[in-house]
Length: 371
Image 1 (cartoon, rainbow, N blue to C red):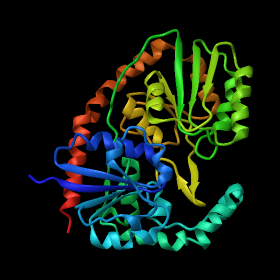
Image 2: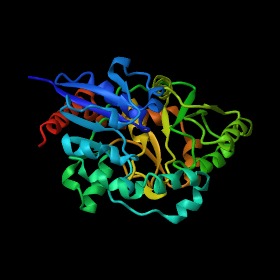
Image 3: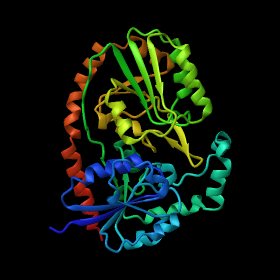
Image 4: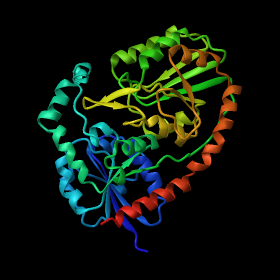
């Protein structure tokens, strides 16, 4: 059977997701692929061979004539560059912010005030690039993809575009290890930011902790700003001797990110219920998926989430509020976590690499034959 050729486009931000595509695609026997990326994305890619990458300044520079189908990894800007592509080829467009990208909600002026430090940037997007009106070009894509069942449920509930939207299950469990040690390693994956996580709440309870076990907290992401970085440094002096804190200063390459998570006993995911994208309100777990879901499944780790975040098809722990989280952290033991990991085992067989790869390959092949 002749292989189908796919072009993958990433001109904006989701470099880690692009690397996840690569690990799956390279094992697909019926698919050939090439990645087209902007220069600002290139330096964040460490696992994809250079011969699979073509750097382009815009989508206008890409010739798609030899490809059977296209996957757009992120589409939040420059919508006009994709108009002709949507008309000529079967395109799967991943959606990361449903209110912005599919339901076309209006700007919340509350967000304009809250994000005043980015006022000039967002104003340029709306006045010069006209993202508010041009985003509706996205409806010309043949298929939409969302990265979790909870987002797919929201599309179905909304009633629009449900027949064109599929769950793109890219999360497979690469490893599942649990090490017994004197110290419990707790990792908070992703940027250290109050925009997406309740970092302020977490910083307020850490100095209060008097844990039964030694806890090592790793903040595995770039701090949002200098103020957050200063708070991280100060925490090292304020916390109990039972607590150790490690943090980073800049973007973390995929290999380092994976290496640190592999040693974790628990992933701490203080996801905020409400956030925004380009001044448009979004709800975590409902209209916007957290990358922490992928971190848990890919690394075979249990997450500690707020009860506001929709339950995944995975075994996690949950907290109601700050005092509840404080109590959970104070009483953690290796023995308790070992028991929780026993409850995780039945979920693992649903996320084997072969199962996820085969299902995704079939979805891509079906896209390539779309008329």
